[in-house]
Image (cartoon, rainbow, N blue to C red; front, top):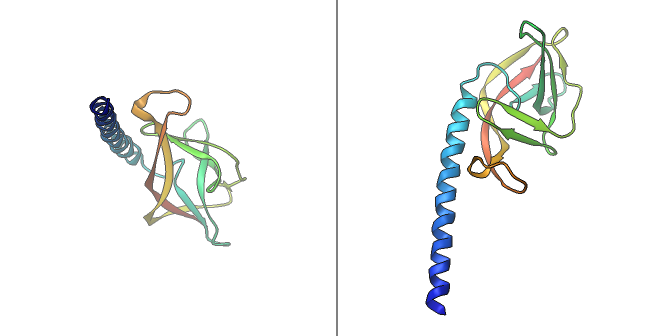
Length: 142
C-alpha cells in the first residue's frame, strides 16, 4: 500500500511540475506577444499628473480610424486582466478615465508590475486559471 501511495504521489508531483513548466512557457509567449504592441494598452498603468493617482487602463475607446478617443481606467485592486496574447481584456469596475480631446499621454519610460491571468494550459473552463505578475508600461496623463 505504501509503495502504491508513493508512486501516485510521485506521478502527481511530476505532472504538477510539467504543468508549471508548460504554463510558464505559455506566459512567456503571451508576454512577448503583448509587449510587441506599440503604445498604450489595456493593462498598462496611467498616472494622473494633477492628482498623482495611478490606475490601470481598463478599456481604450477608438474611432473608425483607430485613433484613441478615450482611455478608461479603474482597474487596480478589484477586477481582473485576462492575457490572451497580443491583447488583454479587463473585467470589473470602471472609472471615467481620460478624454483625449482634453488630455495628452506620454510614456514615462519605466514599468510597474500588475497581475494578469490566463487559462491553465490554454484550456478554457471554470476554475482553471493561472495568475502571474507582469511588468506593464507606465504612462502619464497631462
